[in-house]
Picture 1: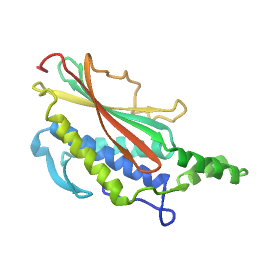
Picture 2 (picture 1 turned 135 degrees about the vertical axis):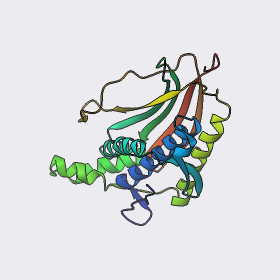
Picture 3 (picture 1 turned 180 degrees about the vertical axis):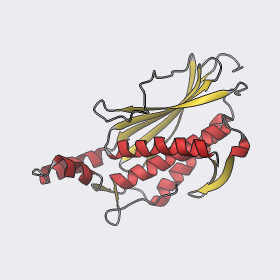
Picture 4 (picture 1 turned 90 degrees about the vertical axis):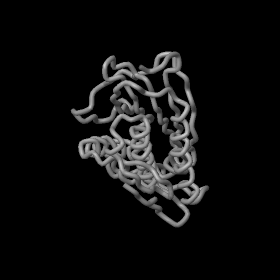
Length: 231
């Protein structure tokens, strides 16, 4: 799902464009992690190029559909400014214990929040529904080029790859969960259920690079069990 940034004017980026980029990052980060950690067989993936970086994406149709449903909902909540965190957990299939927890924290940049506040003052008489739709078109001036943002994305994916090389080997069969943290007032589809946070026992924590679109800042980190071999 390679998508371009949607700029409202030259040199600016909108919430909608930033959301597309962040959702794309989540898609390829999840695919890469599932491949590297052997959650699905290697033959269920194919190599593709994303913004100048070779990465792995699944060819398993059930997984493709599952991730699409999740990411479509993530995209909606990002556009509504209701999503604060996305988490990918890797769990033992037998014991259900969480062995790894990949966490993506999402914040809105101050410049965007200031522009949104100013726009709200100018549109004081606007209907609530129209205001929500208009929020996706509020833009901020870019402080970096699209190529610089692409490089940030490539660097984080590369860092995910390098981080896995020193993490404990997963020798048992594992499954995964995707958790999202939202505002309390969001409308949640019936297929989604409340969940515990799936924290890792006695974790080692590694912080990765930050992706910054000038509207969203995404901090990535991974926690993994460090006290014994995962077997």
